[in-house]
Image (cartoon, rainbow, N blue to C red; front, side, top):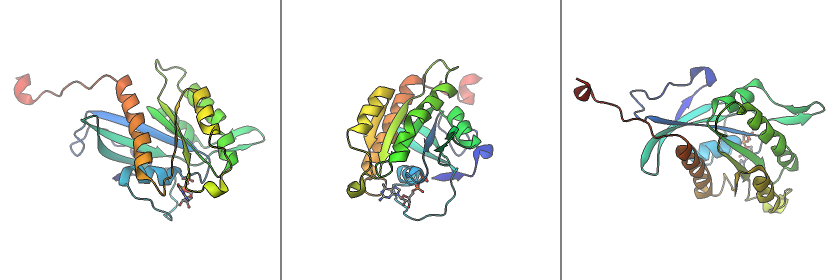
Length: 210
Ligand code: GDP
């Protein structure tokens, strides 16, 4: 996994180190402490890192195979949003990340009711950001920390109901305990996006262009 430190240093793909023609840009958004960083790190490295340096807002990249095609995935981790008296409170980085991305992962924690209550407003924010685009970005809703059922604060049926109302896919996952669920959710998102985007044109070799 390659860490690209911040939004201002996003690598322009394809590069010599990254031969993929297709680049998938994903922003991960949600409340604070719901496990956004843990999920991104889990997806890209297979590892769960319980305690890591708090360095929210990183952009990560990695090459993966999606249905046999080599793609470069860039994943933008974002600072947590919260609600205050005037509504949804988030940094410019969250807004910029949503606008930058082709696909969105919205995360809440099953142990944190407030993080679930944010989802509707976050989804509206995504809708506003993409109002001008011809297609809506694929969005998935992840309910994280499924291993902590003894302190569940969001009932199991509420996530799927909300996802159905918002028209997005839903997964209940545990970044700490189950890599395959996390991997499956991100891959589904990549597939949905690959279906929306036309396949890249084959690059011509110099011999063919002569
Ligand atoms: P973020 O603020 O949304 O990026 O949240 P973090 O990824 O920093 O996670 C917040 C805390 O929750 C950290 O202590 C993580 O180790 C922990 N955490 C993240 N995902 C899980 C999970 O699936 N299960 C459990 N038990 N803890 C988790």
